[in-house]
Image 1 (cartoon, helix red, strand yellow):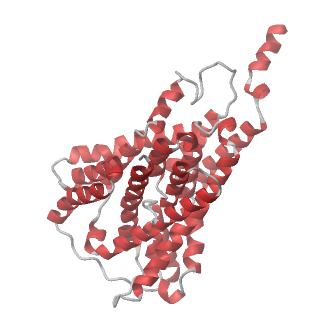
Image 2 (cartoon, rainbow, N blue to C red):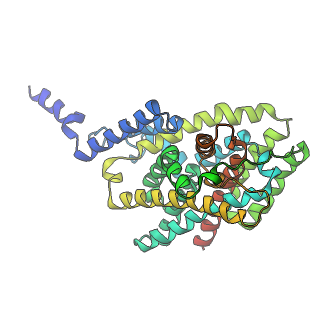
Image 3 (cartoon, rainbow, N blue to C red):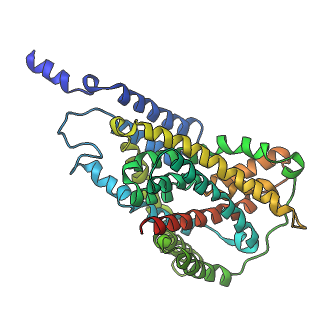
Length: 375
């Protein structure tokens, strides 16, 4: 009986805290949203299950958790903490991305840039709450709605906030269909939502090949800190557009990105151990993340309306919301909101232009912040 009672003391039931129970519940909610609501299931499901694993209580000294040196989970987590996974994700994104719409209508790049204002406004908000400059920069990048970029910058500037920032970034990316539509409707009139846009021009193969090379040189000369993310993004795109490395491009956009997505989501979820994650700072980061996402969406829509003051061929302001770089979900939301007003209005192709521009913009913003704050 003594051995039996000693065994009971080692079970997760006996070691469970209210914090562990709360995080287990959140993990189950993430899994439910992924399966029932289909909210970014490729991310929320592994993150949610990682939360379950990370919050099963274990005996002190047993190397099982993410933060236990030498454990299997800690080795997985090196890909997050050392910034290895985000560039690999960018390689896959580049191999999947078609920049044709953006190249056919370059002024839409401005919408992707405008949405990045959410990053810098959130940075100011984080400073006002007492976060240090590096911490504020890492938190602000959540406004770009780009999970890999947020993880990469946090791993370099504020590794102690990495778990909270990663969960906040991916949570709000998954909730794009919930957060963005009310803001889009609030800031636009029905007449604006009904605007039809001209079909994009045909982009040549030569343009598609030259673009990733020239864009890489220009972006990284402006912000050298973005070399890793921008470099992998445009390498992946060049693999795709050159048409001579189709096997490599196919691997990057299928098997490789799938494996990295599983490991990234699972590792991020497992890092949310209650004693590390449930802090005042984490709650502030979640609040700032929601604010930054809303501000980024609003900035994109309002800037599209501003551009219409000078354009003969008007833009549908809804596409400005796609300037946040939650690819391709924010572009799909633009299509969904537009078609609720007019089922024959097809905005997805146009929305992809500011959407992919937002990916580039958030990576450049991260590079700028890293370069400035590492001095």
